[in-house]
Image 1: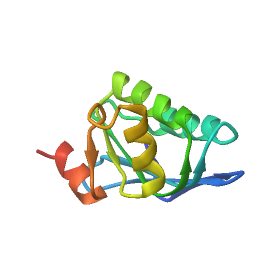
Image 2: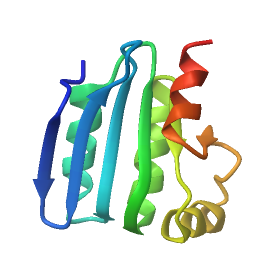
Image 3: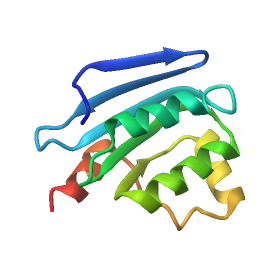
Length: 118
């Protein structure tokens, strides 16, 4: 389960894990998601995943490689997940990969968390 205020920085990525009031884990990823950082992102998802769901906030991601798409799909196959993304860096890769409609996506963390609280 996510520990409030827990943050990890490796290379060009920072991952902060929090929980909302209802206990939904939220991973906030910032920086670059690529081959050099994907292991850190994968480890954070494994550490903070929850059987009831996980919110992955990518709004502060500045570069998003296809390995990030693969990780999101793998995660969504194992547990309920909501992806928060509004940056061109992420949306462009999701669209180009053809998975835009396959991943549950929200425009804000509040909307993503609300999905799990219904």
